[in-house]
Image (cartoon, rainbow, N blue to C red; front, side, top):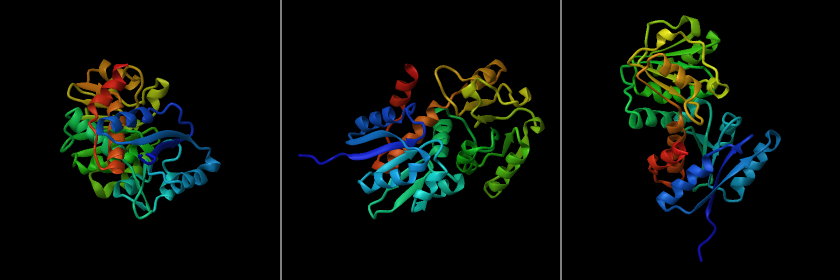
Length: 275
């Protein structure tokens, strides 16, 4: 008889909306891995105790979503370089020696979708990142690792953009500005790292950032095109896509960390976007 299957899950509050169980179930079937992946909605006051209990009972790994990505840093025995840069953790891995590795797969997930799936060139290109919160911080190190000519971080509050740019200044040519001070004309790549699309809003950036060769990426996703994707297309960009690919690619990287095999993402992405 076979023993109990390895236990995984995603922690958040709320978490009922998460597509992670569906995604990881498809990954498991595709790769022939026997595992269980569940939703864990832990209240803030019980988070530390419940996460510790999960691992004490033999749990092998957790994904971490809002609002706990920063808090989860303290649960890890060791952080990867990308988690250190991000200041946040979205993947916890129980290792054979009983220590817990904390990683952040958001940035590598975005780069995989941009560079491989969408075939967008980043090296020696001008990139605009809209927003200076945790979503932007989580992707800046992998983005700068591809050696763009310039990364401009634009935020409603200029001081936040400048502070984030300063934190990553040793990794590449990065500047922080307020929305109204974005200069230099059209960018090659624009990444919306705000949550504006979730409420149907558009970041207050000038239309001049868009050109006929601009590729636009919204880290948000939902049924159909997001508000930002529609706005970009209406103003004549080359192409614009929502963040479904990032969602699936960051999950695939988590799966690789846990199981030692990276699943194919195409079938999962197709299943999510065809419904």
